[in-house]
Image (cartoon, rainbow over the protein chains, first blue to last red):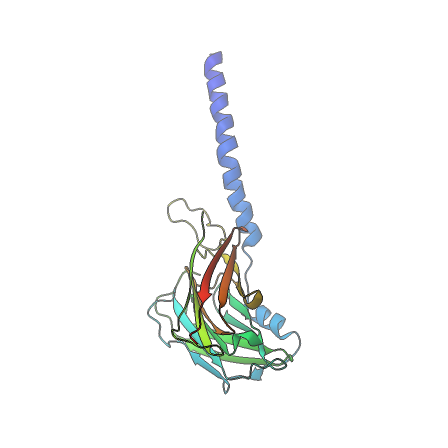
Length: 156
Length: 110
């Protein structure tokens, strides 16, 4: 009987020791990091009290209107803006508006890039607007957006 | 897990002063932390490529902060003004702090 109890106890201990931290670790991590990133909040943070200018005249967006797959949506931005040492685009940010996680990428540029251009693949969970924000080193912010119709959503 | 990535210059026969495009392809998951594993039902923790820095002959020419709305295996293209022969070094850091480095030679024709 004693031997049986000992074995039972050992198994129980090992089970707690092995499985529990793994399970708890996952649970804690999910709780800690499952923060929704609303597009409005991200936009407010980016603007920081300023107002965005309409960038549709200087920004050339190349995004498919109806991509085949929401998991891979190519986004290509070209901004017609001088890239001289005292007047250049210093940041390009791409946001989705209706994903659970809306921030895609933020790209810091310098005049060494020569032109303001960015191509990335993003995922979209449903039909929504994609917002492209550009900031100059003088603090001007340009904003442009495009509605993308997604038939088959990428997991987001 | 070793981070895998490729860096290449898309243009050919470029001269000093030209603007070329560099392409970065990273083989990496972009788990959002919202999805659940279908078999076990456990939440898949957030795990993604976080930070990419491009350095050209010691000068920082690009810094990317990626987030989970990027596709799995992210692809990035960015411009670069050729200032002379040298090396474009790309540093990757993922959300677990694992690092990797890739580089490509820039050889303008004269």
